[in-house]
Length: 108
Ligand SMILES: [Zn+2]
Image (cartoon, rainbow, N blue to C red; front, side):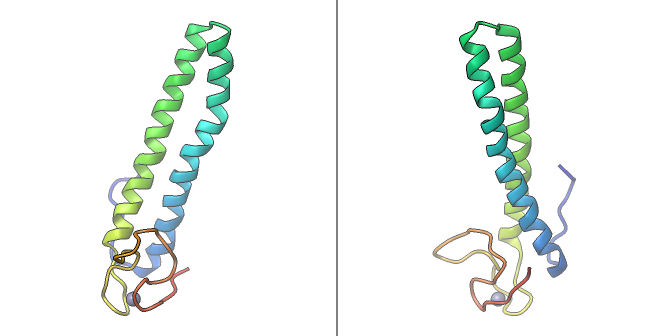
């Protein structure tokens, strides 16, 4: 995780969205890769190997989701440069999109 994420700069917004997706998908990818291995080694009674794998999965997953949550909270606080409202936050959803949920401004 890189310290503080810069806020309020429209050029940073696409980067935030990318960082969010990288963390989000990275967490799932870790599960997809290590999950089956953990299952196989768990079945064959290798407590050391499965312990190490579980630790890698836990730490990696927390790291990925930590960076996704940090990016997401910055995305939620980001205000649209055109209309001044919360860019990705509306009463219907908080899903990070490349267009403003209020005025439709595109930052891609
Ligand atoms: Zn807007």
